[in-house]
Length: 243
Image (cartoon, rainbow, N blue to C red; front, side):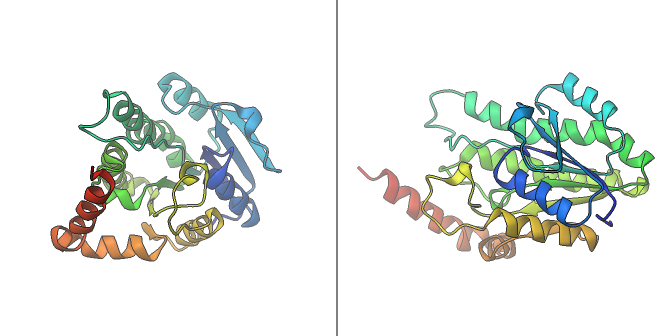
């Protein structure tokens, strides 16, 4: 898909990766970029038109899709991570919030915008996923489950929308240097690098982006994940929870 001259909507565009996505789209010649956030006053990137949107509000999603019918590039970036365990969490509230946002919110956006994308020639959908799509870990149990579900919906929607000419791109990344990972001491990609790789892939009609070496390694290890992935997760968990 050609980004120059396109009309894009980016969710979670008020900070971090979403802001980098919006900035990169403008740099590549997008004719218009809508930046969606719960509080549109926080969308301050020059050249980006703020849009009020909570992707967990189905009625609002439908309203926005109807109002911004010129969109031919949808970037589903909005997401939440509660770093919650399955058994150790006090209740299911974190798991429900992550699934409502990362899975159902993304699904609702894809459903609402698909007819408009078709009317505009097909266009593209970008879903921001994670290396955690590929494996589970008690450090972020319910987040990983929601991203795995979002990965599955991305692959299914790609097939459903292929006939209307819509490119569906899944972007997997490890830690990115944003507010969400501010307390984590680990190697991180910059939001700008992720945005650049993402839209290079869109312009090349590629369906998957693996943005860093760890993500590429974990994807390659999936046929042998119980030998190559989970032992180190177990070791880290034991060290962190040892009395």
